[in-house]
Image 1 (cartoon, rainbow, N blue to C red):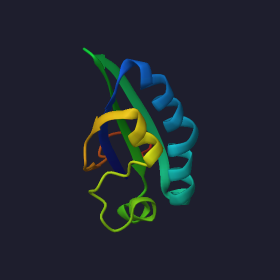
Image 2 (cartoon, rainbow, N blue to C red):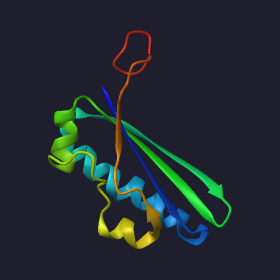
Image 3 (cartoon, rainbow, N blue to C red):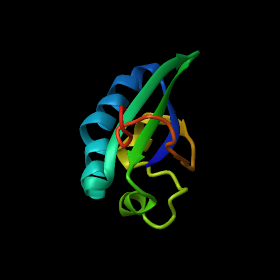
Image 4 (cartoon, rainbow, N blue to C red):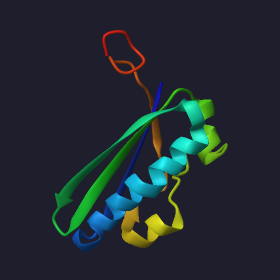
Amino acid sequence: MIARVWHGWTTPAAADAYEELLREEVLPAMAEQAGDGFCGAEVLRRAEGEEVAFVTILRFASRAAVRRVVGDDVETAHVPAAARALLTRYEETATHYEVRGPGRDQEGG
């Protein structure tokens, strides 16, 4: 399993709208594109001074599933225009990790 980790920041005023966009549009669209290769997601949020930080952790069955969603350049961040409009800044790249601990794809997880 592959975890795709990415960070973005909003103003406090835009944070709820951004989180709603993620949950209602962006993540469901990614899940649809990946098909059965999408294994879930977490959205982490915290206030950081005058910004609100978001971390998304998307889980995919394989790198091939990641490519179905973001294309061959898997390191480039996938940030739709509607999300960019709500973000004050964001990472241009995403980082990928092999999931090694207990989880959905492991017995007892």
